[in-house]
Length: 117
Image (cartoon, rainbow, N blue to C red; front, side, top):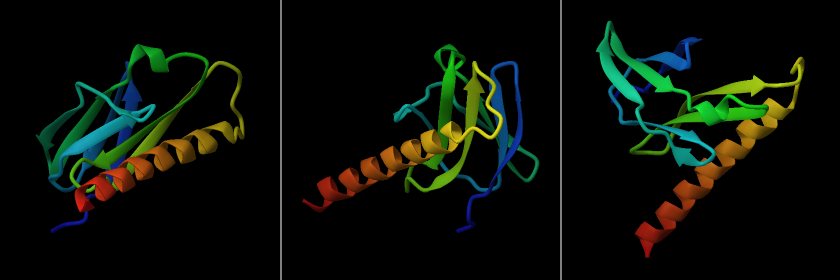
């Protein structure tokens, strides 16, 4: 099986877009919960991924989105939106991303534990 590769394309008009070079079921997590209305459509040499950013993420603060393979919980990519005060060299984005990834790992660990029981 080909290793999935996600390449960011653009963030425009409330839509984050990327190109995926493998056919996998994709899940986009925001605040630890999967987003709805994520679209994966056929494209040249792979798949186009379109993520509508929820309006609640367009507010002050750091908002991280983690893109994972829904079958394996393997991280494929991420993107961050920072709004409000200027964010030059802001470590908040990195901390929020680490928190989002930790939440993802905890969910995968709990899922593995419940399967093993």
